Length: 89
Image 1 (cartoon, rainbow, N blue to C red):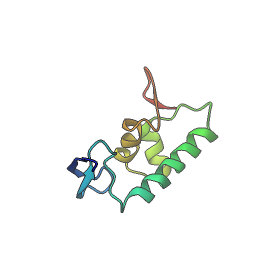
Image 2 (tube, rainbow, N blue to C red):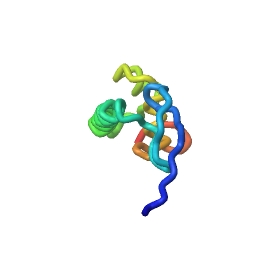
Image 3 (cartoon, one colour):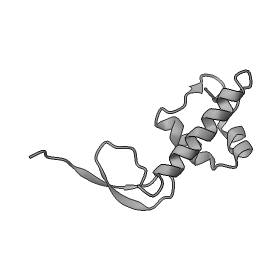
Image 4 (cartoon, rainbow, N blue to C red):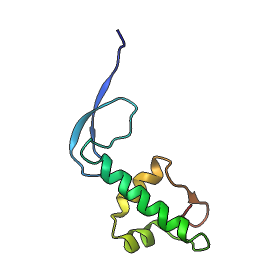
């Protein structure tokens, strides 16, 4: 039998506490769909504007998405920040 460990974590999107398998991204089941929607919106904006340097703050304002959610995607490695400017890539 496989020995798995679980942690009590705070969802990065909604803030509620939930039990998650250790080592997984801290997004509750209720917010997984929203995480995907936010990812797709940010990816589309960045892809559609390859010559424009967009900061997390600018993306947040343009898409009306909380900065903390975009920063979370950066922390998870879904987006990179260009060194020296903090622009999304």
